[in-house]
Image (cartoon, rainbow, N blue to C red; front, top):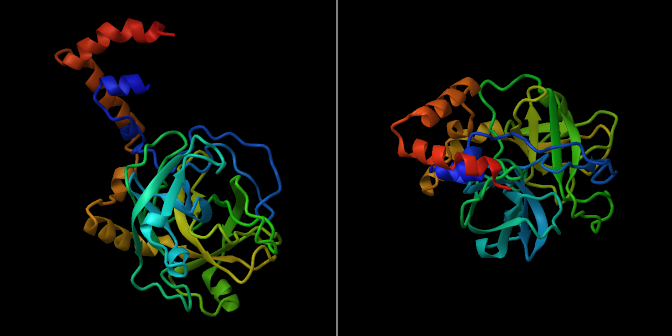
Length: 316
């Protein structure tokens, strides 16, 4: 509980530091046909996803890397030439009209120095928020893939608040929508997209019109290696020929190519992102370390906790 963490001198957000890629409160929601052939996301299904807004209007998605950093696409800011003071990051909700969302200001926009608008190569950016994100069951960082990456993922998803109708720019939704994705063979995809580079990957869903669209840009393509496992960000929604056309995949920034860039940029800005910190230790080891902390009889915290325990157990 929060009270227990405070008694032990552990910050509340610290308990979420090793929980990247988890969805503790996710339950399947009611299915509604929105996005491009998509369904409404369940509460807590994408706790790492954020809405990037200008003037309280959503225009791109992003993912929580840690309490200071948001990962998104460079093209979201290249064309608009937005300044950090114009931006806000909305976290912790599927419904953008929800009053109980967390809103963060942005102090810095960092685009990849080799981003090329001609072919969308290196379409990756980082946002530094003005104060640390308070982690909760609905605000959890996404994991970055371990090496080596599984050759086939069990399941992949994209989600966003973008257009739900291919031809209607006014079909943006305030409710988060999701679609399943399959990562396609790079060589096969390059035949359809001659300007595809090795920094990109393709994802779609054969014989279906599932796709991301305008307003979804910058959001994460996330995959899991198996049922009940953590989720990892594999790509960033980048570009495509159209929205929702059968057998034409969307193009994503291939995130594994940018591990070193993320590490270097965040260190230079004085808020280093260390991927290892976001990876949970073995559960058995975690339990034993907690047990030793509780059972140390010489610890003042032990006696304080022992005295307060009856009140904590029966406090309404």
